[in-house]
Image (cartoon, rainbow, N blue to C red; front, side, top):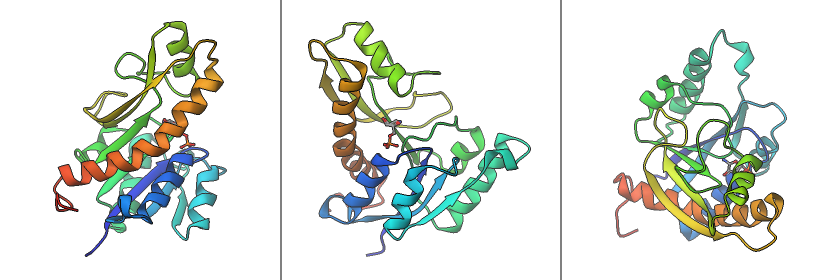
Length: 204
Ligand code: GRF
């Protein structure tokens, strides 16, 4: 069977990218393959991870374009040229423009290191999320995988895993436990969503 092609957009370390790549090489996600990894940062370690895994890795510089829409036109072109059917954001820090969302309707997923919608939105990323969760004294943080729409951290949830906030937690400690869960949840959520889209038979 022809594998489903995933394109991954990153800006940094790419540990979620690694989890996705690893899962495509096991039963968990072997109906899919990562066809290309695109970064908006030249020094993103995720690019090295992709190359090490034998996957095409592209740096596309947003500054080389007159505006973001043109930048995303290029990103879409590269994704489409490789037959990408699902786009996964994995620590991709730029806001998407409507043109890329329209090019992949309901076909873009994101992972967020906290409960949505409460701990999401503009400026709510990385350590800001964990700081806000601790300051709010909630019992649980979470990992949330959701479909991307025009609003930040907004589209429907595909999968969510609660992560307990422990007494004395620091943002760093919480971040570490959340990240471990991200690596487990993202590949599973992708597999579920591919079935949901009808791209793989439900029995697989
Ligand atoms: C993760 O915490 C993810 O939830 C968020 O950005 C971080 C990316 O980490 N969107 P990595 O680059 O996958 O290691």
